[in-house]
Image 1 (cartoon, rainbow, N blue to C red):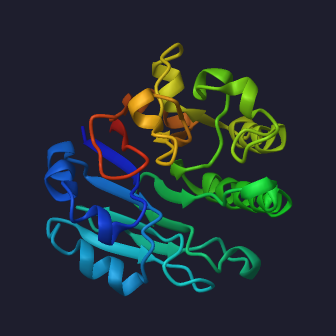
Image 2 (image 1 turned 90 degrees about the vertical axis):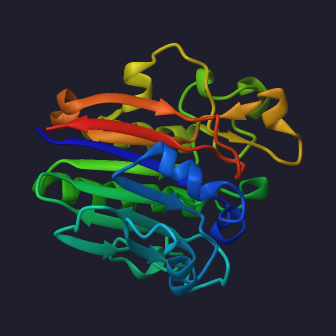
Amino acid sequence: MTKLKLASWNVNGIRATIKKDFVPNMRELGADILCLQETKASAEEAKSTLEVLNEYKIFTNSSKARKGYSGTAILTKEEPVQITYDIGLDEHDQEGRVVTAEYNQFFVTTVYTPNSGEGLARLDYRETWDAAFLNYISWLNKRKPVIVCGDLNVAHHEIDIARAKENYNKSAGYTQREIDGFERLLNTGFVDTFRHFHPKDELYTYWNYVTNGRAKNVGWRIDYFLVSQRILPAVKAANIHNEYHGSDHCPVSLEIQF
């Protein structure tokens, strides 16, 4: 039997977060595969910053369109069979939002889903992204099971957001169009692992710095581990780690045993 722990964290700028307690915290969390979003650095800068975690092999993706924006990474103790970047469509591959690691029994895809923006200015683009990402994940899922993790920039249900009524169809991340996109992903054969294990827990993964949301626990659950339904029996735990600070998000984790 192989036991694996995976963790995912939107670090909101790896060069800033690394100066806090990131390294000891991540070693304490003890993930075999660590996925990061919003590194806000070039691929080379992110990799050199993360090399202090020398127990991992490091694979980074970065935005080609805007410097210091977006960016994703996978750190893995086991050498993957293959690493791929992006989803193979130019219109969606300019912001470094996806890294996929292939292993013998499954894929791990980390994603930083586009935010619909102030005034929902980017909601139309977000919908085209959701459809394209769904196609990409579905294609992977035909080959072997997929673990999808990252900041999906959507709160699924009222339980996943502190002020649901005030934000519904007004705020990026909680419009019906975004919720529908997320549900289409689930309906193609994926399971929200945290909600599977914790059906009633009101825990969040993101809090707004500006409104001091974390101190008030006025937050959103927008960071996920989704898995192909056919490997759900192998999943042993899914947790939110709000004890870790250093970003406006906190890490989430998954434990799996084959």
